[in-house]
Amino acid sequence: MKKDILKNAQYWYDFDRDLFYNRTAKKAFSLEFVDDKPEEEILRRMHESTNGSGWTFYFNSGPSDGVKRELERVLG
Amino acid sequence: MQDRKPEDRLRQEYFHLLPDIRRVVWCLEAEIRYHTRHIVRSLRPHEQVVVKSRVKECESAVKTLRDQQEGRTFDPDNSEDYSLLNLPDLAGVRVLVFPNSRLVEVDNALRGIFQGWTYKPGRDDGGAVLAPKYYGYCNDVSTEVRAEYQIVPMLIGLFWEVEHSAMYKFREVANSKEMQEHRADVESALARFEAGIETFVQDYTEPSSGVS
Image (cartoon, rainbow over all chains, first blue to last red; front, side, top):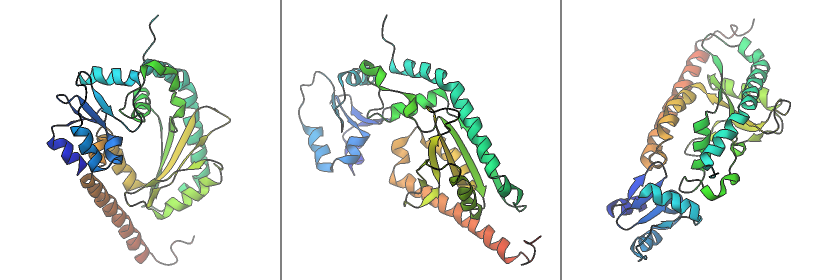
């Protein structure tokens, strides 16, 4: 199950934003993305490297800069 | 002056629309009561038709619109893109009917009155129609505020009142397979109870007693 994979990798669920997030990896997956994408893609995204300085958001429709700012503020 | 947050703009829009929302809900409730009065008059002692109306609360309206965005976040740079008028249920009326055999009667009585309204029924997790639902405008009151009416089997409707408010905040839990199974169990038990009552009444009613 995709949600178990995320849970096992220390991704927590934000019930207000419907996001799976991991503060250490600085990655967040939208519920829609997790629902729609296959398990392999979730795994690939979880393991792909990022620049590490800011959050990476995995959304079906890429979030705007404004939305990213808001979510970064909320996720800390 | 600093731009306001989308939520604040929407709250302002809400209070601008509120008088219209109230008028729409009063009008819709009155129409529904009027056009179902012949059914209400013919109810047998164990049968019920209850009409409930509600104006969507401000914070609930803002949250519903926000929840339509991926990541449940408004874009603060594009506040003007959002409007509560996109919500179909600012004004809502729910008709609770018991037993279920009366539901079709109420639905038929109202469908002819609200012609042209969009049909979008509530379904169970298996896809079967549980409760007919319609969206549209009460044009003589407001051409902006959309209204919704739904006809619901009473037991299911009362269950939904508790279930929706609990599950509303926990979408991921609500959509889980486990909770879907629990919900399906409750809905099927309530449907069986209704069917049982109807069968009992049918079996123990004198054939002539329904004719006056």
